[in-house]
Image 1 (cartoon, rainbow, N blue to C red):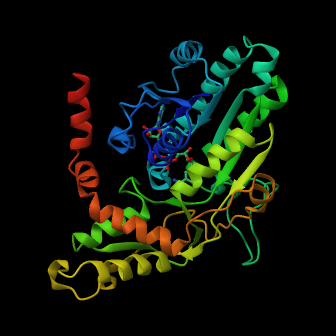
Image 2: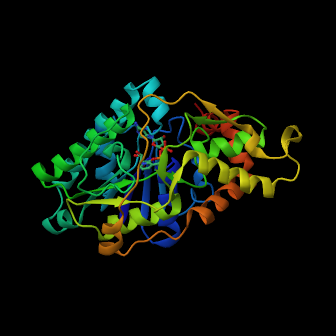
Length: 355
Ligand SMILES: NC(=O)c1ccc[n+]([C@@H]2O[C@H](COP(=O)([O-])OP(=O)(O)OC[C@H]3O[C@@H](n4cnc5c(N)ncnc54)[C@H](O)[C@@H]3O)[C@@H](O)[C@H]2O)c1
């Protein structure tokens, strides 16, 4: 297959690109604007593969997208490009509205223009796979509740509201124009190549520097964590085997409070690091409670039984095995995150492009 991945230089997109090149013979075109969150170093070793191409394009540029689609002739588009950080969406929602809503609209229009030129059989086989989040469902009330594919949308943050809007657009393009779309809504991901502003990498890196480990409010917010490679595998399964017009929830059955997550990271680091910074004995001493995020949802949890029963997908990692792999990856790949912390990942990129 010829597959376009938007946002392939990001955390989850790069995992999907690596998975497709490692496990299939598919040709991959990575379309990415390379915002602060995009990092081609996450694809080191893959850029020379005959299966891989890269195009630096903003998904808000419909003309460029359309031309690229007609040139590459995709059989499927997996749409991951987005602004993804809730805190940034609170401080500056404009970029979220542009990329997540207008960008998705542009990609749908470019895809429709291309799809309409295909033969009937090609049209039937084409897939537009929109990658979304469980945050569109908002907060869960009781401890027994789970998000199913039928849960109503109640997004709380500018980020989740913009993702909810993009999901509605994708459904409308399927119902109105017949574009063969599929949507997946996934819980919180963690794993290698996660940008250091997000909770798990932030805590690992701050601990290694002896800096405070910030926890919002009381740390009782519950998230359902999924190892990123399990998500990438689920996405490729849905793209190849999922039914047109349907939604699949993806989750890891790993509900943890933020405080439990931070404590578990500290336990692993306490065992792995013998010489601790500032002569502290226990990384947990660095835990610092900070003022809660406005509109912070208390609990997300996914019912992933549909993808399990219909498409036979289950995650390989438990939270314990996945978290250990993640912490060890950050210990063994310091250059990847140090280049982000000192900003050189962006200057190296500019140098490479000669601009
Ligand atoms: N991270 C999670 O836990 C999680 C969970 C569920 C769903 N999702 C969804 O999965 C997708 C990927 O998330 P992620 O964590 O990898 O995000 P990320 O922030 O790590 O990566 C986003 C990528 O999109 C690119 N991008 C941003 N704006 C663009 C634009 N206008 N044009 C082209 N490229 C652009 C960035 O350069 C970056 O490479 C998002 O749609 C997100 O909503 C994420």
